[in-house]
Length: 548
Length: 42
Image (tube, rainbow over all chains, first blue to last red):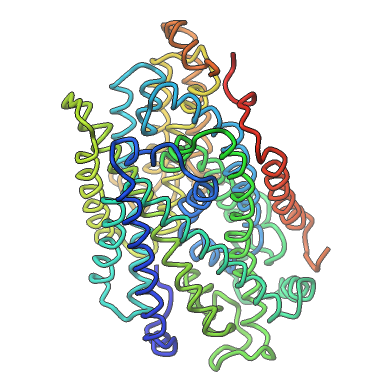
């Protein structure tokens, strides 16, 4: 993902930004050190001692949830296709925060404490009394998470490269090293303290960005009206986007069009619902002392999502007005251009270009820190969950080690970071947004039915959960390899076996996200298999669902 | 409304603000509540 052209770096007063970043890294180092000092045992390392402050918990949850991909990648998509993406903001708040905390958080915290579970795989494994299930989940996590952590890593490293004019390979190494240090030593406490700082920077930066954007464009109604008036330009200037169903930036895409299916199936539903079954987010419910902390975190979390992603998508769409109108103090070179035209066809550049051209340098500096925060906070959470899955859940269970798992988990974190670095080097350009959507979709299809059943369905069986997870992953992979055009064509496996790029070419199947059929398959399999297989002992179920 | 061209977009904006408001109200009402009655069954 490319953010700013190299020429921009010089106009950004690199020494000022460099000094800011150095201070910022020192603050991160201090918080990581604080986490390290307070980490004395396995529970501290994996669950932050189950005593995290609600503000830290909420900001950490939000900062881990919202990555560079959401702010710049999806913000740029809003610049290209419009405000329909605001439905994803609604899903993020309603499902990713409210339903996640109120309907999943309380039970996860209580049941996790009852079962003495320290990680997401351990939680599901203990709930269904199976170490092998724990191993299966940890394998799925450390197989798919490097895809997501590496795309976030690429985003952060590209940003450092272009803003600080550092070679990409060095950017990758510096970025991974800074995050690695505070994750390895600080454990989840270090991660959550740093996330809280980063979350605060993100919300401040994005709120300022939204306000400055409306000020620049003459107010809320005026800005939206201008954007609405530009709708005829889609057909005239963007015929390819028009053919995909794009009808303007303040209207929904044409129903059943390619863009409509992408918006609804991949973004709204895949990413929106997928947030519920993210292992790195679910584990945060187990870090707090009581439900009171979760109640307070709901308040902070809702505001956080509204102002971070809500701002990014609104600003992304409105940047079209800025780039098109000529009386807004536009920098030379931009005149009568749509946002995607000004960005040279790369939606990832829309938001940074708008900030660079339209707003004062102070906003650019703050936005630079916001971007680094978004990338680092998500990466640290992913590295931590990869390390705990690999070290605590997989290696310790397979080798039957009973010792405190801190050292093993730290080694797992190092291994996870190395894998992510390798994947980041291998992956092609332009995979950031798609990599995110794939990861969210696979997580939802594999884990969501099992996670729901663990919390709510006493009759769910171990065999049912096994079958559900395997069928969810299998259906997702089948869809990605043989049905969904973007991945199927890119991988080329379907072409090699069947001589065509996708198995079903009839509209809309090549554009329907695999999540749409993989999740229902996983649910049906869970219910069907659970109805005909051996139930868990009543005593265990009573213990799991017991109130204190 | 607000110069937007589609009720579906207006609805999305209203729902974003309303859902954030629900989070704020829920958090404020239950600020000191540590009762897990909405948690695990008996």
